[in-house]
Length: 75
Image (cartoon, rainbow, N blue to C red):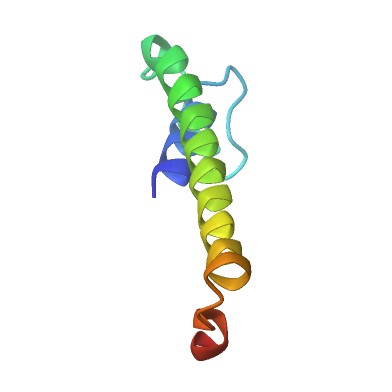
């Protein structure tokens, strides 16, 4: 949920209006939070990919090192 919400907040801080919203200008409301949304959005992507790499690494550990056939049981 963090990535889409921070991305939406970051999009609202852009100077251009969002085409879906049309007449409502959110850029003035969120003007002070632009840096926060940018850092939070990029940080949530970094965390996602770190946890994804950790997950794949643990799958490979179970398959290649432990040889406990955990992946076969899951599939």
